[in-house]
Length: 66
Image 1 (cartoon, rainbow, N blue to C red):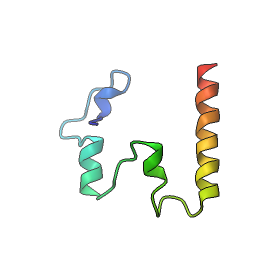
Image 2 (image 1 turned 120 degrees about the vertical axis):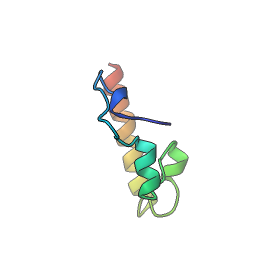
Image 3 (image 1 turned 180 degrees about the vertical axis):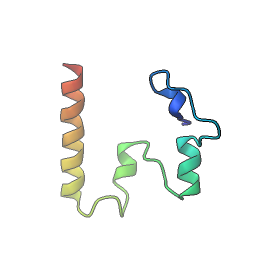
Image 4 (image 1 turned 30 degrees about the vertical axis):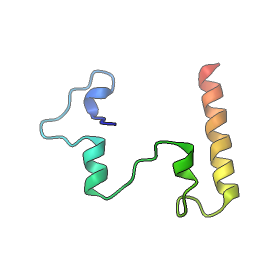
């Protein structure tokens, strides 16, 4: 997944701007690509926290579809 400012509403990228992937690699950040990635150790303190987050995302997605 490569994302830059050019991907958003016709905003041209700034000269020399890093993509999201480049920034993540530089900062040693791992991109979350699925719900399974969220379930890994260290992302949430408890399973209940993960469940609350996923319920919130589900609610937001349903409201966007309405």
